[in-house]
Length: 414
Image (cartoon, rainbow, N blue to C red; front, side):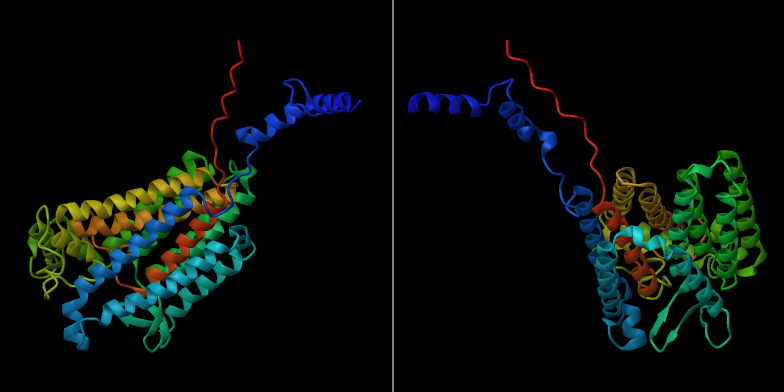
């Protein structure tokens, strides 16, 4: 009796190929039944976080090297600028961690208020006694040594607002009055306030961010091309209208026409890069930073990279920004929704366009516009806001969905 009972129980619990137990066991062992990896542990998240760390460490090293001479001359310590940069990097790291841990969808409800605050700060810069001037430009506000550049905040605010707008009106992308026109209005208002500082370089970056989002969002090509052409014409007109900007354009076209004045910055930048050769003069051995190249630790730090680390080092830096573009695009493609896709595209376009404008000016293929190299150039506002943008990109990467091919079905036993 006991033997039969045992046999029946064994037969009921057996995992036969066609039985329920066998089907449940096969489903449990199937690869598709495994739970997805927890947010924040994807390869894209780790790769981007590691790349941001590399950028910041490299930036600190290059700021220390490029600013040592001018810091000793102006402040009596070779560590002055690098210590300030380290403090801003620490503040940016805290902000990056906070933004990366916040669900990026929460920024949608505050996008309008964020944009309004950024525009208000741009207006405040223009108020006499509030805005601070340096080298003929009024771009900063603050108290004492603590200053911020509102135009940097405006780039991030406009990015979030445009991404939210194009996400909410995804079904209306064919209607340019509902999508493209509001973006152009906000861009024109922001660009006008930035140009009054004046700051043509940041205006171009803002336009690049907005138009990239509209293109990826699905705006019809005809109207987008028309507004892009109109914007380029306005940029050329603005560049030729002001005497100092016109001098920069003429210096870009022929720096040797006035080598001691208008073309001095261009020539010294190219001389520094040429002096580096293939392998460079060695870290800390730059000659251009000894008073020959103005703004060596900020807007023209890439020239010091080329001189001290050579063509190989400069190529590595360009390759790092290329890697940033690849990771950003992959995060956008794996974003769980349209808003995440547009955020990832906007941040990636922002950082890569700004790097292109900066490096292009340093190597002489673009006019000088005063745009810093993201994560590398000395500058508090630029670094902190760029870290906040990277935090947004990490937040999207935390929720990225991994799309893979379905598993191959098992072969039938013959």
